[in-house]
Image 1 (cartoon, one colour):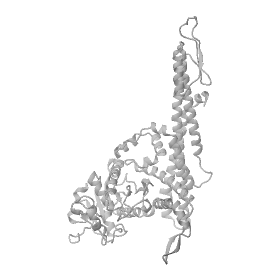
Image 2 (cartoon, helix red, strand yellow):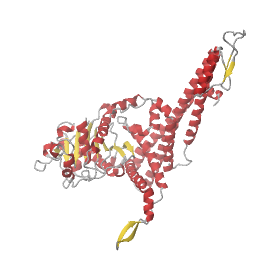
Image 3 (cartoon, helix red, strand yellow):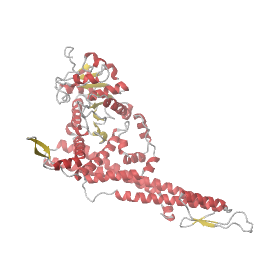
Length: 593
């Protein structure tokens, strides 16, 4: 970049353009929300038939278009803001150099060199030291040698000219670097000339985001940083103190960070996590489509010791060794993402409220935190912790359980709102026999759970979390017990279902008001007795034991997994507790306990 171009550039104009793109991004986001949570809901609830189904499908595609616009315009706005920031820094250096040159009566030439006049004391020859022209140096060693040489010159103008020329060269170099860096990034932020947002488009958006984030590191580092290992309250204060521009930059460049910070508003976390969700899904689908399909003939028969044995074909084994693990992992993750998408699409069905994605990533077994209704404004909130074998791929069943709790609980209140949350925010044991006996899964996940609960309080309107219940199943009860044992649980009620033990020996140790620990054990649920030897308290006491001191709630379901079956007393009792009507829940008689 030459001197005249940099002098003419007005960084503020790029910042103003960034404001425009951010405004467009916000409008697109609002349009997406209106389409998905109002218009599509109205069509789904009021119209039936093939035409209505087709209309909802088209509205879903339109919502995706607006979400894509939101993402791309958000990235463009952030890129322009980062470019403006870097150009402003270069421009300040240039302006300083030009002002210093004017003050010293130096001449700045069109190529950035600086001419200085004769000056200083006369030499032995009776002449004043001659003037000259210097060109700027940006290499550290060369610049140091140039300054040293200027320092030996009896003409004092030489050193001033050297400083100005070097500063001009630095400014031009930084401006050129910013221009060369950001021009291709901005050119890449363009959509296909069609109305279809494909998996490839979202995968491209993921690549664009990485490009903008990588290039914008200097700009992002200049912004207020989230508190290191901050509490949810500290996270909330950090976010509130950011300007709209700074919030947009963080959401565009670090959506995973924003979406994972407990204490931030649920609407903010949802928006950030949906960006991660859509780009991750697009990238994974694109990768999956690039993997050859498994051979159609996977099995064959061989004779081993005179007996026929069924084994995989050589072709299938070759495919499996090369692609199998990744193929299975992608399919498993995408299955879970489809379950989350199905819940998004179910908004409005029989009054089901908007869903909020409060946490999401696909690392290891995957994480997902999904709320039915906004917990920041809810009068009653229930947080469900699932147990062994829970992972992203199988999250659909756990989501449905909390949908059932929401419907049952919502039917028991009038004029009050309910939010129910599926919290898969920990690495659950993968296998009942091999992994569930170990306690480290519970203690490893306990701090994350406590932070999430504290975050609900920090983000709730009026700085109060309202009435909050924790519902835990199977090994999830062990995690909740470990969380209470090692810190503050921040809940009003705890409901255990099918608990193998909670690491503590009595309800009094659960960090909730006296009389607000509830337990369910259905007929035929063998997990409590099997698990007590590993996760019970003193004397292997578990919540089902009378001496533990929990309210033993009646169940009319059987086995380990049906506590949330619709239209059952088991579910109804949980719903009553969730909305603060535990005194109406039916308890077992002493002889039944």
